[in-house]
Image (cartoon, rainbow, N blue to C red; front, top):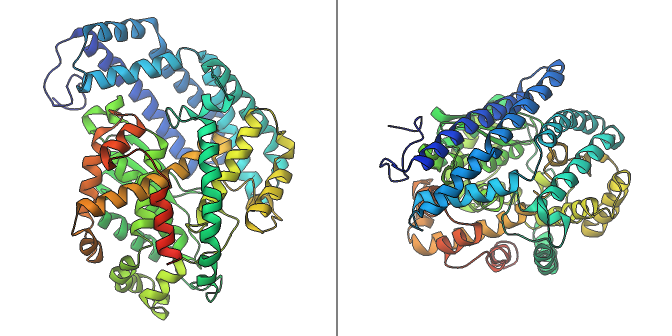
Length: 509
C-alpha cells in the first residue's frame, strides 16, 4: 500500500493502533484541501486572469477555513490524546508525528475559523494590490492592504499568545523555538562582522563595472540552460516544472508535484539562473521528503531556516563557486552565445561582484543579510505598534541609506520589492539569514565527510552532495526540531562562524 492509504509507518509496516490510523486518515483529507489551495495559489501567481481574483479569494477562504475546521475539531484532539497515552516508542515515526500534531493542534485551536477565512480573502486581494503598486512604484496603492494584513497578523498573534514580543508568536510559525531577542543578538553580532568583510570585498570588485555581464540573452535560451542546470543538480522534472512569475517561489502541490518559478531579464542571464538555482534548492528538499508521509509532520519541512539553507547552499555554495563556471562555461556559451566574450573566471567574478544594491534577491552574498536585518527591524516595529504603516517608505529609505549608503528614490526599489507582506508572511524574513548560516554549516560538514566532494563538484557531479543532504536533512522531515536537526547533521546547533569564515575566505583572503 502506498501514499494514498495513509496507513503506514515510516518503515512501511502497517500501524495497528486505531486512533493513529484515524489521525492519518484525517490528515490525509486535510492535505487534499491544503494542496488544492496551493494549486489555486500557484495558478493565481502564474496564469490566472486578472478578473479571477475576487472568486479566487472566496475559493481560498473556503478551503482554508475547511482545512482549519477539520483539523481543530474536538475529535482530532481526542485522537491525539489517545495516541499520547498509547506511548509510541520515543524514536518512532509515530511518536514524532503525534508530537508535531499536538504542537500544531494546540496552536491552531486558539484561532477561530472566521479569522483564517478573513486572512485568506485579505491576502489574496493584497497580493494583487502589491503587484499593481510595485509596477507603478506607488506604496499608497498597497498601504491600506498592508494595514489590513498587519491587523489580522496581530490578531493571530494575540490568539496564539506570547511571553515577550508579539513578534515571537508569528516567528514560531516559521522557525519553531526562535525568539525575537535571540535574533536581535544574532544580527548585532553579524552586522559589524559583515561590515568588516564588505570593505575588502568591494575593493576586490572595484575593477568590475556594475553591468559587466550585461548582454543579449534571449529568454528561451535562458530557459533551456536553466532547465539543464536544474536537472543536473537533481531536480526531477517528471515531478516538477519551472514557470514565470513576478517574484520567484517554490510551491509543492503534492508528493510528486513541485513547481518552481523565476523571472527573466534578456540583458541579465544571472537573474533567472540564480533564481532557478535558489528555488530548485527548495524543490530538491521538497522532492527529498518522504513521499509516503505527505501531509504529515514527517513529510513536511521542519522550518523555513532549514528550507532556506537548501536554496542558499545550491545557489551560492555550488552555483557561485569557481568550479561551477569552469564546468558549465561551454554549455552556457552554447545556449547563450553572448557569454563567449567572457572566460569562466570573468563570469565567476561577475556573478560574485560585491556592491550594495537595492533589490534583496539580486544582492551579493556579503550585503544580502543587511537586507534581512532591515526588514526584520521594520517588521518587529510594525507588529509591536512602534511603526505606522504610512511611515514605512520613509523609515525604509532612511535605514537603508544608513546600512548601504544608497538613497532609495523609488518604492519599487525599496519597501515594495518583496511579496511577503502582501501574503501575510510577517515573521518569515529572519529565516533567510538563518538559512545562510545553516547552508555554510552544512556545506562545511559535507566537505569534511565527503573527501571527494570538491572533485565531484568540479566535474559537475552533484549526486554525492545531494545524497548527503537527503540523508542528513531531507529524509527526516519534522522528526527533529530545527536545532536538533542541525546538531544531528553537523555536530552543533546553528552558528554564525561558518558563514563568516566562508565569506572571509571567498571575499577577503
